[in-house]
Length: 277
Image (cartoon, rainbow, N blue to C red; front, side, top):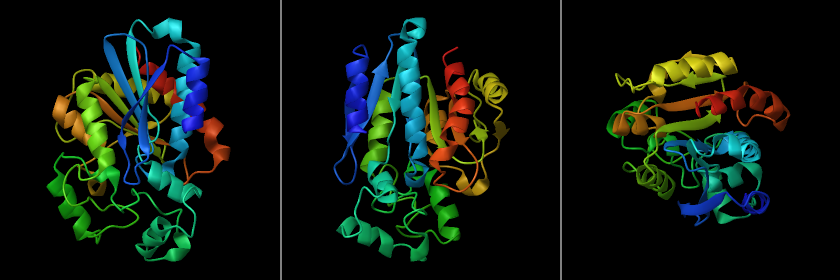
């Protein structure tokens, strides 16, 4: 990621990057910014470790935006946070070796070791980052606990309190500091678009969701009850009453194979461009 960002900045010197915080293992969390328009769009990827293909989608889109910079830079301030969960992604992709203490501690949290590490969604401490935001966190906790997710593990543990994790705390602080107008969170899988949260109806959100559906072929869906509350999108909508979207990229079982990348990007990139309009 660091090498990719370094190369990106070398090729496109008008782009900037910043460290917005650190992970549990003290890895930096990066944001790439371009443009100087009044409308601010934030795209984030890899809240979940085994959904790491979304980081590649975000970085490819950053490059496409840079190539067409003069077409949009006066209208949009673009923020891309391509790797929200670097420790978890490293765990799933082999960046954390099997002999490392962090690897062994994570494996010990999994009931079926044969599924490890592909089953891992959480950060390195076993907290599901997309269940750690302060939007009805208590309701999420009750729901997850009722289904057995009562302690740190591969998925669905909400943490000890809202924003207990440095990754989610950094995301919330960055979003507030930059007065974001639209957020798009890239996840896998299902080829679905989630845009509603409870009874909130942010101005323009329904229309934009319909346009996303039209250009991508992905379907608008309601968030399942077991996944409701405490997500980044939920927090953004309920805090700012502005459009926030979760895009479930691709089909299959996470982690999706790289062979799906081109097909996913062909469907998702028009949707991302649509957020600029």
